[in-house]
Length: 376
Ligand code: SF4
Image (spheres, rainbow, N blue to C red):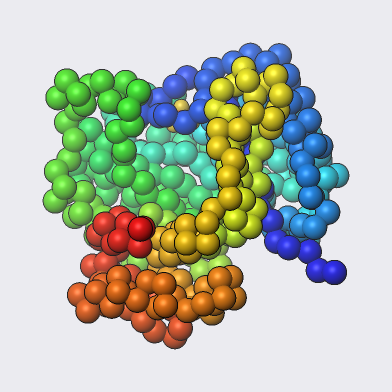
């Protein structure tokens, strides 16, 4: 019997120091605590149910800062996953890396552990902006890290950049973007800064002390990114993601295509069929019973699953496939969402072509609003 495809996310909740804008589940820690955490993760992995029915297509080790923990520890986690699950021979195995955290000999260990895609958190090539964000590294350290990763033989590298940084001008952002493009990574993600409650940036924002760019500038920057990366041969394939042909992040595509994924670690989310569950974000609780305490644990209704399929799929430039919808839910997209679709198509924001629905450039500019119209 053929196995079902599965993607796995592993959360590493440790960072050297908290960035000013970050609300991810991460904190500073000691090597001893990291080893205790490894043991907890191994326990959660070994106790996962139903592994025999899956073949792992992608693994994503995120955080936090996975490159800050011992590389052998990541190798042990991958070994444990391979014992538990069958891996596809061409599985995409990604890890996140932050400049200034790479340990001696780490890249060789990552490669022999099967990691074949590295995502580097650059955010900016302007040292002032990096300081504003509270990042621990300089632009030079990013350059050194990128070169080391490339020289070690990694041929699938993503670089994360951030727009809308306080005080950032379109020109400054363009310089960062062009500097990164000169390195010719296979993939670039450009996320706009979001001010999250509970972060130092949020406090400053409430006091009116954050010099944020106007909405017009955000839109202008967005258009400039699209133009500049297209000139260099990258294709936009999702709202914030650009790749050279064949280097789209397969792991993230699974999220956007509503595929099955299993998360390990505190705060990690899983979706298996319509069963959604998320581990507790409370580190102490997680360590007491890894994978036991859940933040949420429920089955999506058919309607909820269809809504998610639509609004996640429409994030991608390829859009949603009528055939996949039919196979998954046993009905036509237009049966369920006929009115919304008609309205968005009539406004020239949504296109129906080759059995797919996808947003036009104008639609992508306001996709958050449009996607929410699919929610009941
Ligand atoms: S490195 Fe990433 S996960 Fe860690 S604090 Fe900064 S933004 Fe958050």
